[in-house]
Amino acid sequence: MATTGIGNGSLIGIYVGSTKILNGTTSKFGIKMATRDTTNKDTSGWKTALGGLLNWEGSGDFLFAEDASYGFSDLFAAITARTAVTIKISSEVVGDNYYSGSAFLTSLDKDDTMEANSTFSVSFEGTGVLSETVKA
Image (tube, rainbow, N blue to C red; front, top):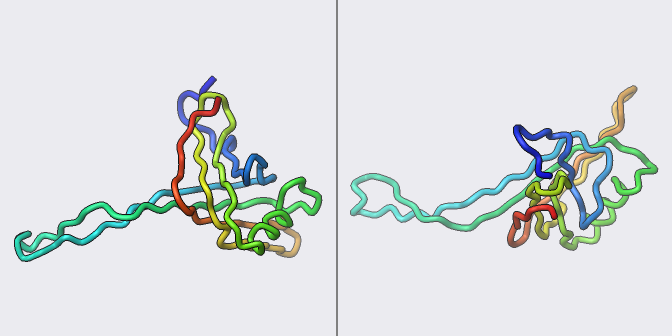
């Protein structure tokens, strides 16, 4: 049954293909639209525009575990291969919307601070359409 009321961010995961990146602490993604300037001498000094290119991107932060079944090492392999992967942002709750598309990993950063949890972050940029689908 679909989630009702205000969503719980703890349910949302980032997946590469159908495999969840484990030990997530934050995730985000966004869609942007560029505009095309149409301002001219007849617009009375007002800027005018039309819709332009759409793009999407996202990122996530994770706790590092050397033995994670899908984690830093897998993302390292994906980013160094320089090939697009399928990214999915989902709660995996039946009836909830999820978002997916082809993307390139654009950064992978690891942080090892003294006497603190080791963490890593990954960023990605979509290439092509981001789809919204209802989880069946």
